[in-house]
Image 1: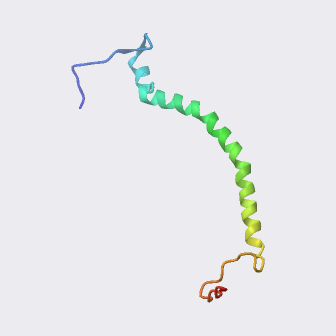
Image 2 (image 1 turned 90 degrees about the vertical axis):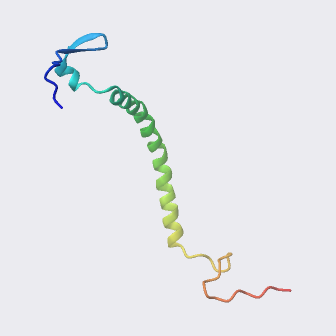
Image 3 (image 1 turned 45 degrees about the vertical axis):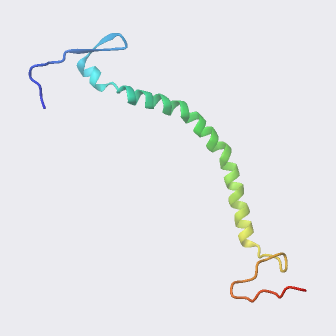
Amino acid sequence: KKNDKIKPKGAIADGQEVTFKQALSMPTKAEAIGRVVSLALSPAARLVSQILAPAGRIAGQVKTLRERTPPAEGAGAAPAEGAPAAPAAG
């Protein structure tokens, strides 16, 4: 609702008088805190991503190599589904 009885003319921000128009364009306290936290965490996030990127590449290459090479015969490979299990020696 519009209020015709109150007409804001100015505001106080950081102990200084500012016009009402300038006050409307300033961020709220929650927005300002969020911006500061984001700026503080940004370098840490960038550092972590740079540290983890080479490990991710190596893991991807190892996975690709593992998928390309067939398992060795009798190297502890699990029997195929539907194949009867070998009888136990006894």
